[in-house]
Length: 160
Image 1 (cartoon, rainbow, N blue to C red):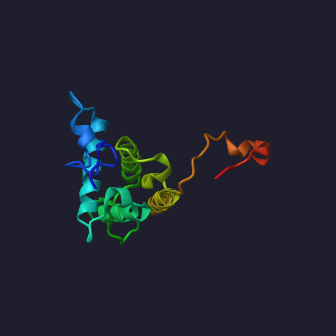
Image 2: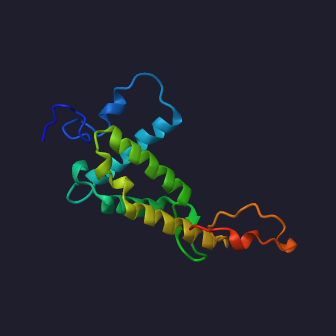
Image 3: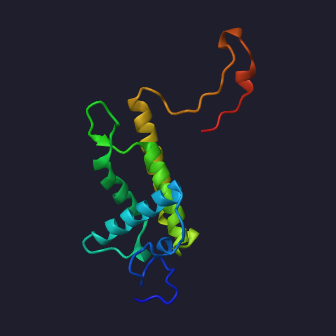
């Protein structure tokens, strides 16, 4: 399936990052990371058996990719668990891949990196890692001295 525009998720081009290779000058750190991550994900899809075209990639492929990356992680979720990727690293990675997908011709409506299941997966990782540190992941308000007996807490709404 050859592409005349060269901007439909990298299909028909020599690599999924053809658009990045045409940009002149030095890339910022973020742009370099985004390009590297996009190349890595594209290579991951090519290495699947059978290979997965980028246009057919879905959130399950993204979840499998995140699980694949765990083998290179340095963070433990539980005391006797294997090392995994840190939540912050995965969250940043998904942000870069989400942007790269759209920059390479993908539609925001079909972006597999923006899927609700990806957000749920990241939330579970964040909570599990916070629990392993003994810190529940809830943003704490800068509390005034609770021993003063304020009635503010009874009227405050909490959202999760």
